Structures are given as structure tokens and as C-alpha cells.
Image 1 (cartoon, rainbow, N blue to C red):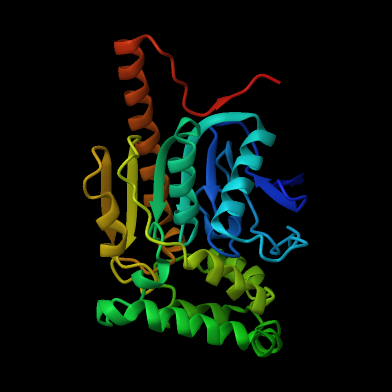
Image 2 (image 1 turned 30 degrees about the vertical axis):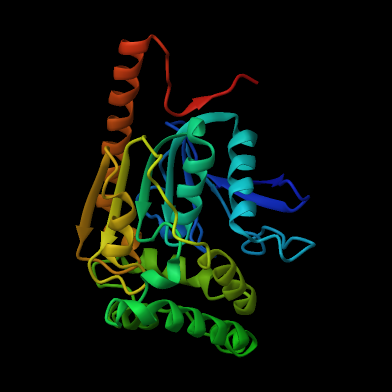
Length: 304
């Protein structure tokens, strides 16, 4: 990955990363504390760019630690696009990154040519968790559990920072139900090695701040949208994903036999669906240009 630092609106240093090579620009809004290792089918795809969330993996914590709201993450996304000179592109989101991607499309529709939303609900994340529980208690259980994990952060640091990532631990993880065996062992090992090193109190602080965002009304979104849901996802039910986009004119939903870690378990599907979405966006842009004479270019870069 090519990495460098940019400065967001409040002076916070944000580390961005970009896949090597040339290609159609695609912005990835990350899940909490995730990096490029979570996307094994896309890391060689030229044009893919993203960033590390505030206080994780090279990005600084804000001086004012309250600056981790949805507003701040959307501002970081715009900073990354502006730094790369990208005026408009397809935007992806995974897990709670779906909330960021959706909000970016709502606030800046001129910057978003299409949306690929993977294993995450658009807002109200805690209400979309734990499908085996009654709907009325999901938010309470998810929120309370996350707060308890936040308080246990120092203990988790002492334990998880010392866990060796070996063939055995990777095998056990892939057969535990957390990540499915369809995932590639090497890809899982790469993702887990960095993930375990988080400051876990800060990790759950980020999750609480973003997860309490109310459910977003996506009714104004007119660009092509694709949703990839995991049938066995414990952190984002299919219903919580599909409900907000059911009435959108250009929405496509695909449910896969995957867990929340769908990008690791079905990487070839993610790549194929991204290609299909890019084709849909080009078709829509062509139709608009043919009808109105107004030219759109997905993945367009500004002149520098």
C-alpha cells in the first residue's frame, strides 16, 4: 500500500492508503479499526483508496477526543478525496463504515456516483445486531455490551496484544463461527495480526460514537446502490440493511452465506459486484449525458 498523511478539518493527522497502480478511483469507508488486509480481492486494484480511522493504525487521535462523530468521519472522507484530486467516484462501506458511506452520499451527492454497502446497516448499528434476539432488545444489549467492553479495554489489551497469530490460532478462528472456513487462512492471519494490536478502550469508544448514529433516511439517494449482506451476520442483520433501501429505484441486494467478515469470506463476490456496480454507474452516466447533454465521469479527478 502507498500511505501518506493528510490533515483533516480540526488539525488531526489522518493516514490514507491507496492500492498501487492506475484504475478507476473507488473510495472505501472503513469499518472501525479495519485496514486494507480486510479486502484481499481489492488490495491490488489500482484506484482503491481509503484511510485509517482516527486514533488507529497510524492516524492520530484528535486533540479533542469528542471529534469522532459521524460528522468528523465524513469530513475525513472528503479530505481524502480532495487530497487525491477526486471529484466523484463510487464509494464503498463495510460494517459501521456503511453509515459513513451513506452519509457521504446524503450530504454530498455530487461526489458519490454509486454505493457498495457491505455487511452494515445505515445508522442505528446496535439495533441491527444479534438477529436471534427480539427486535426491541437488540439495541439495549448491543449498546450495553459495547460499553462493558470499553471499560474492559485495558484487560483486553493485556490479553489480545499477546495472542500469537499462528496457523493453529487462525484455524481455530476460522472454525469458531466468528469467521467462516471459506476465508483464506493467509488473508485472515494478515487481518487479525494488526487488528489484535488496537487500543481496545479507544476502539470501543469509536464504535460507541459512530454506532449511536440514528437510522438514516436514504430516500433522497438516486445513484446505483448495491448491498451485500451476510446470511449469518451477527452484527448486521439483512433486515437492518435492506429496510432503508427497499424503495430506492436503483438498489440491488445480494445475500450470501457469510458472516460479518464477508470481505474475507467471499472476496471474489465483492470484486465482481464492484465491477457490476461500476458498469451500472457508467450506464446511468451515459443515459444522463444522452438525455441532458450534461457530462458525468465516474471516478473523475480534478485538474491539479
